[in-house]
Length: 269
Figure (spheres, rainbow, N blue to C red):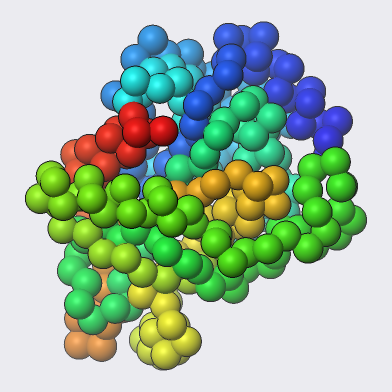
């Protein structure tokens, strides 16, 4: 794995991606946030050695480098999911490459179903903790050069970044929540019984990504900040027919608010 990480990192540096301050992994319907990146370099995933390809609509499959919030960032416009057939190494490699490129923090976003009864469609939830029901991406042989065998997950999401985001939202009159994100494999949306179960065990929102990337990042002591856009509701009496298109449409409506929070947060690093 380390050899592939180094090979991919060298390729990207040769393309001009030098010393980024932060990395961003953008979820469903949120890729247009990258339009705010200035002095940009764009590289398709298919042209990057060892990179998998995004196969999901709404995930463009590009690595974008440039200036955002007065900082240098590298953004993944499109991520990789277990339901696409990718294993742990495919999901892990891009995150590890971002770390080896030099990022100091990892920012993530996703579209999620809200199971907290106080949530509304279109709300933004800052993730404070998670429940991972996906295969742990660290299963298998561990390379001590990358991270320890048993990484601590007591603070998976950086408390200082969470508090800053809440303050930014308040100053900009943006409705925001804190909550626990739960990840499943997908690609099916949840049944009513599953929604009830997830709420019982402590989840506020449910999705199909993010936790493997955060586990990989924390394995390398990389601070993380993540947000969920609530695109549908898994609350009894409020459950409606959900499609990937409806999720994308609702996620796209939050882009202005998401961009405000991310821009000011990254500027504060």
